[in-house]
Length: 321
Ligand SMILES: Cc1cc2nc3c(=O)[nH]c(=O)nc-3n(C[C@H](O)[C@H](O)[C@H](O)COP(=O)(O)O)c2cc1C
Image (cartoon, rainbow, N blue to C red; front, side, top):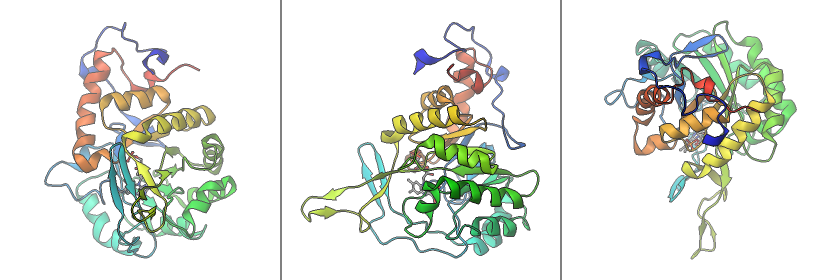
């Protein structure tokens, strides 16, 4: 990938890290840096307060919230592989009512830039949930999870039909309060990323989050059947990074809105590679299970790494066409 860089090459004289500008703007919301935690990998943003300050992150994307609480799928739900994770959590979450009552006020108190991940069973539900959120403080935006492969009723179908992606996004945008941002998270499975990204942009998304997990499976050879009761699961971690880079490249060439790169990001080099591929920001997921402070470390390393390469802003790294 490094050969593809159009600017900010190794020949640029190094800068002082204080000269690097990490700010990123999504739909009018200015974030101090482009490193977020990914949905489902860092709880509700409050679980690691003893360890790190969540307000230092560009944003925290919460576990996906549904209208009603969900217990999620039966065990096993998580399997570690040499190259990442397989998960079949099934959107276990506290539900919107408990979220706005118990979590949002605390997130507000800690000044976390919270992006609330939302999933609905019906097309209208996403907008209804934003309507409820709009009565509360403590969030900067929402991420529509139109891509979770673990929920049979709804999620997957929504996310693989470009017309539904567009109409759900349009309804959500129509009720989104001023000053909040709307991210739409897309699936890498089944449909070309460019098609889905264009649909989300047409519906008024401020950014594309790219990608959710890749459909995967593990086999129990002795039992001669899949390990997960549902058969398929969501594959994440270092093994999906090349897929995610290709999808970010595809999305960023298809739309004019920012693309938030997600998939297998664990090191600062990974972050830079996503910028080269066209991402304006990144989310860290699976890597947080091994080190919950990984995203914080990446923020620290990012300014130094860009400065060493003589790059003032991450956007300068983007490859030419
Ligand atoms: C255990 C687990 C739970 C997840 N839960 C959600 C979720 O609730 N909503 C969502 O949009 N993505 C969810 N994801 C997907 C991640 O946000 C991310 O898109 C994906 O794992 C790829 O990034 P990574 O390789 O850095 O983990 C989950 C991933 C994992 C591993």
